[in-house]
Image 1 (cartoon, rainbow, N blue to C red):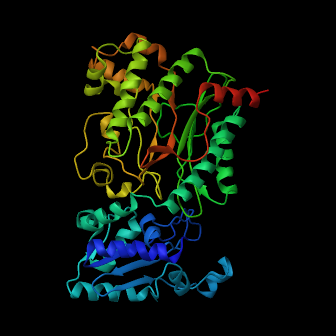
Image 2 (tube, rainbow, N blue to C red):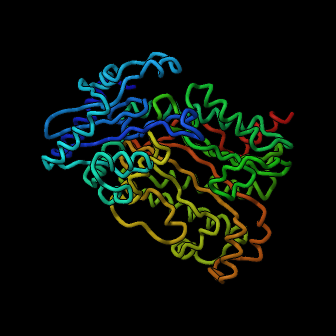
Length: 464
């Protein structure tokens, strides 16, 4: 945890922003995997962590602005709990660590909320994404699970986003530490990958490094020779000479701050000429995105810069033709670049995404519905303290090729005959984590191998 002052100050800012009402922040319960006593790895809700910092199950935080009370509700461990898990600090002791001097048994929460409702206090809560949290809210307020999103407090949501989106120096130190371990995970993958392995062997080593650093992975590992499947969590393929291997993995540290990086490297000692061409185009798009950004510049500009660089690159290979601006404006570029160029990052790898991309990434403005653009999670201007990823990629998706060709879509721009020669290419993505400073964007963490020369040097050494 940070010092108690950090959490006291965060709650103070939130109260000043809202001015009235009662803020109800539900912590997570244990989530059984296949029976009650065999739960998934516990991960506390990020907003509860932000304001209370306690990474323990079955807690609820109340910030009663009207009555100037801050309370943590929860139950101390029974002797049965202690037998299996050991002695843990009491709820009172844990609450004190985040500067809360009022802790009460969970059974008293229902009475407290019902009393607030009877006095017509406004109960602020955020959109909920776990079924048990929606049921808990129903028991407390009477709001049905299907109605939780429409009854969530937009005022609270906006106030939290306004706070959490700007990372403090102590948060950036945590994120940078997570990124450093994440780099180690990626370099290890580059060093151990060999023909004849299954993808799971690489994923296991990446996971081991995260656990050995006393943290965990920040999201399920993507470790695949089928890089054209953007979120591919299958690890059963045999790795072969000539394949490209795409790794998208991140470390989450003890404070639950995340790193999120992607790398693509050859299974052989070197890239083929075709692989090298596409790889270098993705790098050009990567740096074009970063070079576009500065304080106050919309993040959407970084996406457009990447789309233009990719368009120019694949045009040089004969895969696209026509005016670059037209190709980018119409969305024809999305044959190769289907996702957004990046997203916010912090306590969540897609920071606060459960609050809705329109609020988090678009300042309440509507998103584009155009294929390619609609996957851009972040478009608004960036300011010092914003932490985000840059991750353009090029993906050759056979199903997309077949669909668009059958529909005659963008045939004035796309050379479908030439495109067929890349049908089994796969996909390439590189990703870095950055923070916006008063001097512009800064890459976080130690250097990750990115260039063809850097990656081939590691692969040649690994395969000697």
